[in-house]
Length: 83
Ligand SMILES: [Zn+2]
Image 1 (cartoon, rainbow, N blue to C red):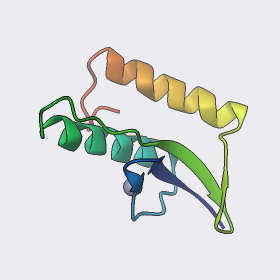
Image 2: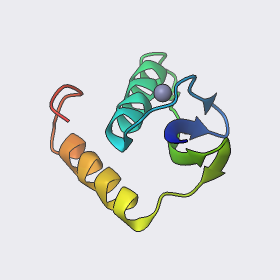
Image 3: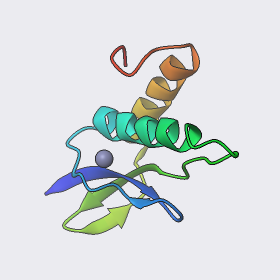
């Protein structure tokens, strides 16, 4: 079974097994927003990682491209719902 997670060295793993890159990226954005709301320069170090049978993998080219498209939409002001 393969899935995606939002993972950071400091923030740790999110508790979900996301079926899509998009949902994992939304999870990254949500964590980023909640860290930012703490103030004091707090930020999330979570990024999207792929998992298969419990083992962590880097994203492949297709997955990286999809993530890049989502990051670009977000950079141009898309809300979570609009992603
Ligand atoms: Zn998550």
